[in-house]
Picture 1 (cartoon, rainbow, N blue to C red):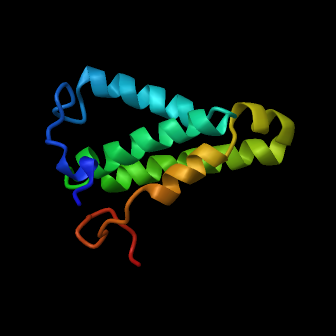
Picture 2: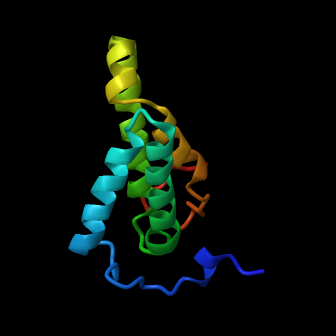
Length: 118
């Protein structure tokens, strides 16, 4: 049985490259969604970012910057939680961001020039 995501044509209509205005708008919405306190909203953002990563980022040479940006966001969220947990729970909850980092597929780092040694 074929996964419908695996069967999706690439490039996706209107999302031909990482730099299209439509995709930038979708990514901004997904990043806002992962910061939502409601799990369902954060999960929607996670799904968009996971699909984006799997279908458009892998193979583009932007894998490491994408994951690094997510890690930087996580560090920022943790700093906010250490400073004021109540505010952080409302404004920068961790569950959406952690879900993205959990579901972002693993990819080989050895071919990346700026990748850390493992």
